[in-house]
Length: 346
Image (tube, rainbow, N blue to C red; front, side, top):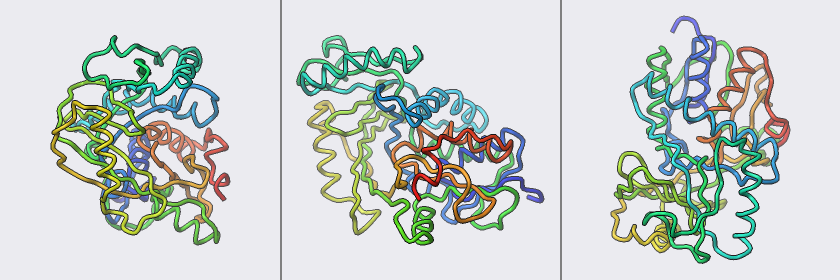
């Protein structure tokens, strides 16, 4: 590639999405990652694109809402361009309601969701009897059903972006010098670099373990029961996850913590009993000190940019993060929320 306008360092979900939007806007882009696309936490299994609860609204929740609304056209265009499906589907989510207090809160959120979600998605309380057999048991007999939550298969989403980028002439390279504008979307390694440079914790890794089952639930809502995400994928598999481990010895091993997650999921959703576990996965997700994505000017590399800290919400945030980073780098237009700036974690 003779001329490069943008170098993206990191081929996880943030890096690939930023590269895609920049390429759509006419920039010549190269993506550099020594481990290849989706090699880190973006190569996981779960793919639950779930919203924050519709209350106590703030910039982070509003940003995430916008991104979840943007997701369908974003992923449709990626698939149309590259011919590879990301497994995206906005099919909603069902959550059992555990007790009377939680039921009261859920009913209050029906009202706030109608306002905060601008009529573009619903958060409703429903009796279990109004839903089909896929609905899990609920102690109160009621569940929350929202229509904003979506699913995708993380690995397929990364592959879909790689295919679409290839059509646009974008290469994924294992090594290349910086050319043009540079954005670092390097996940845990990038947060560790910042922590070393500033002599304090700027961010850290949180290990997660997940499992993939051979269970074709069809096009049904995902479930959130006993703090576990249960996500039916479009390819006839079903993902269960995940743990959140601050302390760990081996970042890529699975153990009894995952066994417990699988057992709890099968107790919460009895129809899963007997389903074959076809893969067990573990990886470390990058979390900034502020817990929000870290976007903007890079604190160490003058004149360069950063997009990091997608802990648990990276795939859901990616469409809008790609948009605002492209706005900043290509047009000089800064619309990044203050809580997302690197200074919030330094």
